[in-house]
Each structure stands twice: as structure tokens, then as C-alpha cells.
Length: 228
Image (cartoon, rainbow, N blue to C red; front, side, top):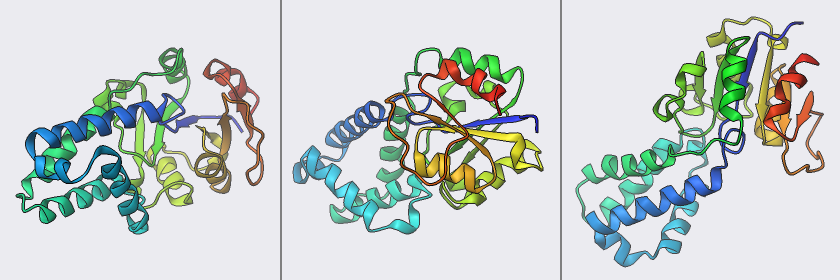
């Protein structure tokens, strides 16, 4: 079966996620310190982050919608400190803009550009990064977010929505590239896709089943797709 579609995870597949989120959280906190200081007077940065983690853990029903999750968390601060709820949208926007300030892995953009000339390229993401805002939306034919799908990876419905957007009836004509063994690889496998595990740290596979192929560098991707 010839591959027609290549879809990608974003965070830790096309760029390093941790430094992006850490920087965004700090900008977010500093913005609140300037505009809504009662929050930061009560919560030091580490406590602020712990509050976020606790809120996420206590709201697993929103794991597919990180945007709504963060807004609900911020809404709690508005109520706690008697601020107008209009702060929620502005505060979220501050975080989101910084969250989309990413630095692609070496060679990633060249690979995407090359693949886009041969395949239908897509994004399937549990996060709220936006390739169109980042400025590379022209390289992708479709994007699917967990918020849009109503479920998060590894749920098969999010992969099916991607197939629908790509106009593909047979999942074996699609391959998913990602770093997370469960969300990306097991999810794609269970949905009937081929899967390519991006494993730059050369970790031992410990998930269920097996990825169709493994790469340690994105420059290996095209050659691995040809083997499917």
C-alpha cells in the first residue's frame, strides 16, 4: 500500500517542548505580575506552576482541551482575587503567543518542505500550538487538534478525523510521526496507521506493539517512509 499521507506530532517531534513552555509560563507570570499583582503576591512562580499542575490533575475531563483548561484555571484566580473575568482572555493570549515561539529542530523545515511536494502533510496534536500562527501552515494540508476532535491521542477518533480531512479511506496509506510511545505510536497503531517513532535519545522501546519504523534524526524520515 503506497503512503499518501504523513502526519506529525508537534511538541518534541518538530521542536523541543520544555524550553518553549517554560519560557511561555515565565512570560505569562511576569505579565500577571504587572497587570494583576495580587495573584503573584500570593503565588510565587513555583507555587503558581504547582497550582496549574494540581488543576490539570483535578480536571481530567478537559485533558483534550488545554486551552479551556488554562482559561478555567485563570478564571479561578479572577474569582479568588476579585478581578474582572476579562483578565482571562488577555492572560491566555499572553501565554499562547509565547507558547508559539518555537525553534524547529535542525533540518525539520527542509524535511517538511521536501515531503510536502510528495505527500499530503498533516498535524495531529494534543497541544495548542498553531502551525499557521507560527508561519509554516503552508507546508501542511490539514491540522487536527484534540480540542477539535473532542478526544486526545491515543484515542482512535482523532486519527480518524485526520484521515477524513486528508480524504483517505485506508489507514494503511497514512503514517504518523511522533515521539511519545503511547500517545503517538500506540495511538497510530491502534487506529490502523503506520507509525514512525522519533527517538533521538535512542531509548529502548517499552510500549505495546512496535513502531513501523524508528528514526533518531528527522533527516532519516524520507528513507524510512520508503520502507513502508
